[in-house]
Length: 351
Ligand code: DP6
Picture 1 (cartoon, rainbow, N blue to C red):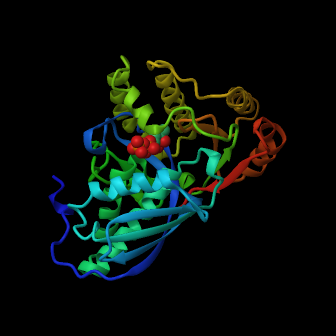
Picture 2: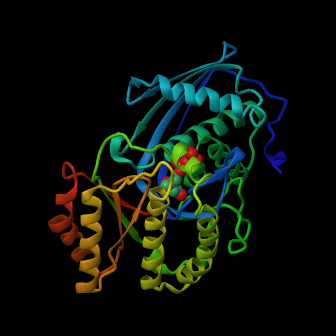
C-alpha cells in the first residue's frame, strides 16, 4: 500500500540548508483515535489557517554521524530533537539518505507557543516539506503534486493532523466513500467545485482561554479511545457525519453547518470526559463563551459559532460577509474578557 512512497536508492547527498513554511489547521470533523502506523480511526476534515504558521530552516550537514539539534525561536529544545530523531529513523525507507548526516533545525511559530494552536501540525508539515526539498536535490525532481502528496504522507507519520496542513482550503484525511481519492495515508483537498462560496471566506478567531501546558497530550488522548466504551460508536458517527457535511458544503446551509461543527467539538470533549482516566479540558471561560455564543445566536440570528481542539481555547468561526463587523464587535465587547490575558489570535481560512 505504501510502496508508492518508497524512496529512490540512487542519491547524491551534499551539505545544504532549506527553508519552508507550513500553516496550522482546525478540524471540523475531528480525528480522535488511531490505529498502528498512524492510521486514523475515522476520516476528518479541516480548514487550513492563514496566519498561524511554522517557519522552519533545516541545515543538513552531509556525511556526518546522524544527529538532530532543534532550536525553537533560538532556544534549544532537547525533547523536540529526540522526537525528530525517532521520527527520522522511522521514515528511512521513504528517504533512504535521511540518516546520512547531521541536522540543525531552526523553527519559529507565528502564534504564541502556549496557545494550544496545533504546533505539531504546522511543525511536522514544515519539516516534511523541508525533507522533500532535500530529497529532490539528492534524488531528482518530481512533480509538485507528487511532492506534496509525499510530504503529506511523511508528515502524517510525525503527527496525524499535520498531513492536512500541506494543502489550502478544506482538506480531508481518512478514507471515506463521500470523498473521491481520500486515503488513510495522506490528505487530499476537498473539491473546490463542491464548496459553496460562503465557505471560501471564513474567519477563525482563537480565544486563548487558558495558556500553558495541555493536561492531556494528543498521543495520550488518542490512546484513551482504545478503552473508551463509546469509541466504536464515535468512529461510526464521524464517518456518518461526512454525509451531511458534504450536502451542507455544497448548499451553503449555515444552520446545519453550525450544528454539525459544534456537535463534533462537543463530542470530542465528551469522549475525553468518558475516558478512563477522565479529562475535562474545558475551563470556566470556555463554558461562559459557549453560552454567550448561543445567547447571541438566539438573539441576533447571526452565524457566530465555535469549535474546540483538545484544550480549553475556543475557535470562533464566522463567515467573512456583511455580518462580520457586528460579530467582531460582540467578540471584543463580550468574549475577550474570558481569556487569560486578552489573548486572541485573529486568523482567516486560507483558500
Ligand atoms: C483534537 O494530530 O495532534 O486536534 O497524530 O498523535 O500527533 P497525533 O495527534 P494530533 O491530533 C489532533 C487531534 C485534534 C483533532 C483534529 O485535528 O482532527
